[in-house]
Image (tube, rainbow, N blue to C red; front, side, top):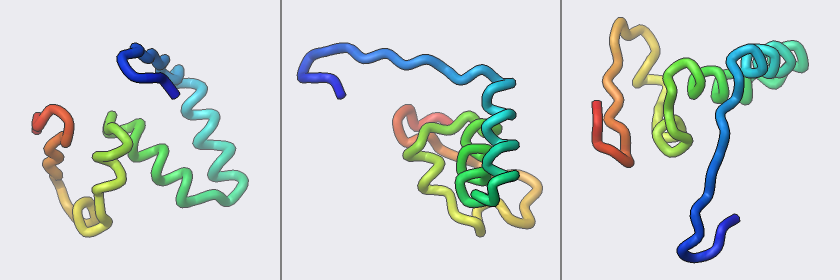
Length: 74
């Protein structure tokens, strides 16, 4: 964790590594983690926006609209 007025950096996860992680989670029966991480990666969502999604927002829909909490972009 960074202190006040300190900059932080993060690096992305390589696509093949993410797919490997998803395969391991599915193989190990960790389906909730699999769905959470897979949805976040495929939709490109921040954690806060991902955690605000509900099943009724995505099930049986042809299209969804997500307004990003940080940028207010659709």
